[in-house]
Image (tube, rainbow, N blue to C red):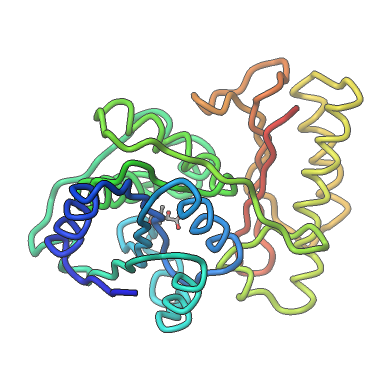
Length: 280
Ligand code: PAF
């Protein structure tokens, strides 16, 4: 498996593969790969002739007091995992390669970018949209693979790909969970053993909401209130948001419908975790 460092190398690789008759899949990541990323790489390999995995901790999607400096960087292990699951190349640019000195160009998906995580992390989705645009422009993939765990990110990127007429199709893969329900996240490694147990409240509340919806509850207010009550039984957790929204617009409505996104974000100690389900 090759490691490519520049946009020019990635573009040349992709164009040669496509000229040779292959489709190209792109799996954008920030590294610290886990079984959730592995599932994206396997999905990409199943659907595309060749697969590129990008490993880039994107500075513009972190706020000033967030974990950019300490975000786990495990490049050699990431390369081994990517290769084991079928990646053909890893694209690992420097910050200067993706953000040339003096860079002032950003991609802003208005409206959606200030909902859910965008409300609590101002500028986050602007950074995501910008770096994913750069990756799509560089790799020219047929398909780009993202996890449902970042469901609001998916909504922002779907809008962006439609608005900017990117040729790539966005493919969304299911959340991968530990056997006890915890959604996999690169940030889970920040949790102490006690916090790891506390964090299970998120997936419990996701399952509770799925069960209430399956039992016929359709009031957005009632579903959110039930989640709030359940969180209050875990006082060590600080809720950031509980939202039930249309997955495309990220706007709430009075009634829950199949296909709606129910999403939570909460602080467990110093670690902010997210989880969600698509109802029905
Ligand atoms: O989901 C992520 O890991 C990141 O937000 C992404 C899409 C790789 C952009 O940096």
